[in-house]
Structures are given as structure tokens and as C-alpha cells.
Image (cartoon, rainbow, N blue to C red; front, side, top):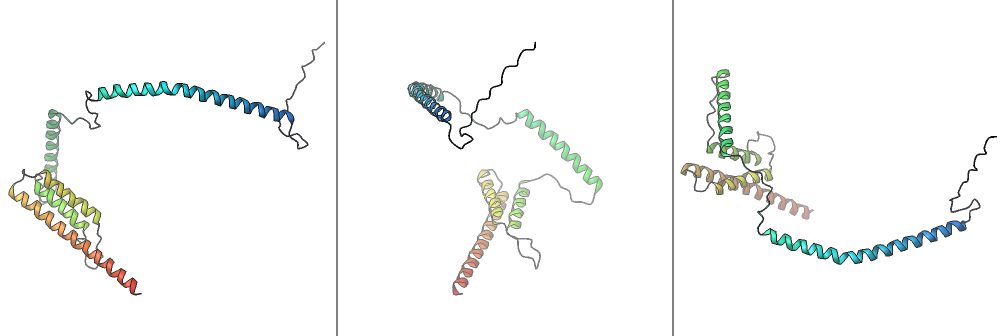
Length: 211
């Protein structure tokens, strides 16, 4: 005869009965869970208080060892190593050959065009000078409102100042005169524009107060 299947038992885990009352079993389970959690917390605090002095001692020992090694260890820098002298020479030679081929191609396609030639120091100064002048509103067409980029102009002027400091004593008299003249003109134009802006702002404030 077939065996009887074992009865299936369901455990009622609801905290509230169907009548809307809190079940006593649920209250007992919650109380037991709270006691167990409190015991675990107490045990953890005891373990932490015991391990803290040992950890502090280990950290202090490690720090002392690190201090001893710091004087002998080389400084840690994130700067990558520069190219070798051979790599620099090879890249320069390849670049020069490529630019010569490009110049030959341009001369063959447009013989009447201006010859580029090698770039000199004055070309760098003139390029930065024109960049700053454009940022200060130069080149604006008649009838158009000048577009002034004071921060862009200031950055280029400051770069020319850095160039002056870094090349001091390494320029010809003509190169020094060109750089100094460009910086003087740009700085004076920058001051003229910023003073005009300040005056306009002050006049606008006065007119606003009169109203």
C-alpha cells in the first residue's frame, strides 16, 4: 500500500494576527533578537578595545621605520624620463626631412606663394603678439563691436613675460628689443582697456544712483 506523504507544516511568522493583535511569539522573538544584538555589540567593543593598543604600537613602529628610510630613499616624482640624446637627434632629423619634403611639394604646387623658410625667434614673438592683440579687440571690422577676451590676452602677455625671464642673457640685442617692445605695447593696451571698462562701470553706477 502506498506510503502516506508526510504532513506539510507552515510556520506562521507574522507579527500581527489576523485579529489585528500582536502575537506573543513575535514579542518573544524580538526580545531574544535584541538581547543577541546587545551581546554581539558588547563583544565587539571588548575586542576593539583590546586590539587598539596593539594596532597603535604597530603603526608607531611602521612610522618610525618609514622615517628612517625616508632620508635614504630617492625623491618620488611623477615626471617621466626625457628622451635620450640619440632619440632627440633622430626625431629632429626625421622632422627636418619631412618639412623639407613638404616645402618642396608646396613650391611645386604654388611657385608664386611666399616661401616659408625656417622659423626664427621673432616669428614666435610676433605670433604671440598678434594673438594678444586679437584678444584685446584688434582687427575688428568697422561697425562691429570689439570682442575682447581679457583673460586670454592676459595669459598670452604673461607667457611673453615668462619667455623674457627664461631667455634673459641668451638673446641678441635685436631679439631683446623686439620682445621688450611687444611686451610694453601689450601691457599698455591691456591697462588702457581695463581702465576704460572700470570707468564705464563707475559711470553706470553713478547714473543708476541718480535714478
